[in-house]
Length: 476
Image: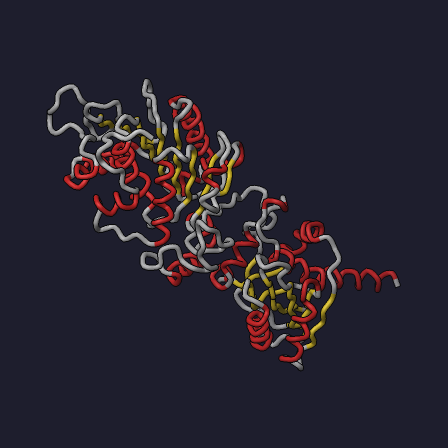
């Protein structure tokens, strides 16, 4: 990487950020984020996608500080900033210009300067374009679907190409965005050009989703991955607001830990998730789900009050198969018409010694009389522990030998027809709700199948078995 002045030591991106923005509060997340952006600035990363929740400093790092830093270490770079509107892109451009003309910036990069007022003549400085004096470098800004005709670009920074959910959910807007990216962004690039895409996710088929479906993408889990990336391959990093994926070197948080607690606490994030679990999964967790190809979607019927003629109070529990799976325990009642009403759910990754207590407390609260526990993968020991705690509840364990995918798919229509959810179930059980309503027919596209598996088990126990009994009675 060439530098503008061999007598001036190149600062790290983090130290640069603190110097020009002394008010910055950098958490461990920001330190990691800035370290990765520095690798991009140095050219070690050529194609980088980063998904970050709202209000976590995404744009300050990538779209304000980074362009100024890159023009400092290489004032011959031609950088373009793009966003969903020209106005927002111009705003980023002006912020970069203010940094470059600051005293703090001049102390680090004295040779990177821009036009002041009308001097020197012959150089451009507008809100959409600024040139570096004495060098080939420049900073351009453009809105989505704007033109970059005639401009060669060394580095593209695309920051939030969708304004809101309405735009992201519009197939027309998504198609126009993809067309603009392929016909404008890609045509302005050369052999050594770099791309940085920083988004808050809105939709499964947004630009990030399209790229992940059509091009080679490698998950960025460790700093060693930076040097392992292949030619033309993207590095992809998703920072979840509440950690739910396995810990990595890049993101070593424990499950449920917030990304920036002082800015967005765990309790605040949980409230947001309860209000709209599906949108939370997209915007804050980086896991958008398309409504196309869903097995259940939002089609479950809901109830306000339980029926009077309750003939059974039961429970179905599917213990976790692996450390990444959920224990799913569902209590329910059955009315005289055979309709099943879900009343309580324990959906957790906690270890057995904790989940046993949670399920036992739920069975007591729901006045459950019989509980069915899958005995696969430690389920028998779980069932025995429950029986010791609840001698008045009949705990029945059994081995589930049926093919999970076939069972879930073949019983999905019956589940929608016979199961009822409480009206506020998205707030009562947000993770359970999300995993049910976003579950896809194509099994390999799902991260978890524990919740649909439990619903299928209830249907098999309470609906399919009853129908078989009726059929046998008619035959006799």
